[in-house]
Image (cartoon, rainbow, N blue to C red; front, side, top):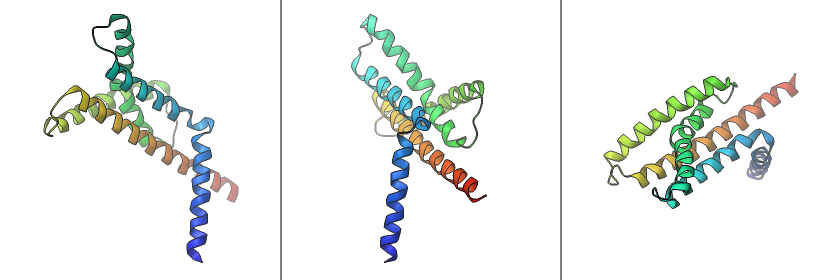
Length: 152
């Protein structure tokens, strides 16, 4: 009987998380996913020599490498407080450079070596994982914050 109650609570929590994911508070998550997919697709499909489209590839590539990994990790670390725009930008760029360097170092000693496609896929996987983790942490914090307000 306790298993059914526990299962009911998990279903309720899953439904609340589903509503949170599609709310306005999670808009940053969907924009991040769009930029991640756009960056990866632009890199994999647009050749370097196709000059009118190469600018689109370069634009999304810069966002993909210099912004998104750090931004998603920044959201994991600072999901409780809202930092200023300047702090967010500087921390995101600095973290992105560090993360790209660490992923490149790890790939250098792996069987895939230091090639562009494994780097792109690793950055994509890292950013996707950390943005999803940040969304879940933010949801749990908001739930706890709302729960404490309603108890008072």
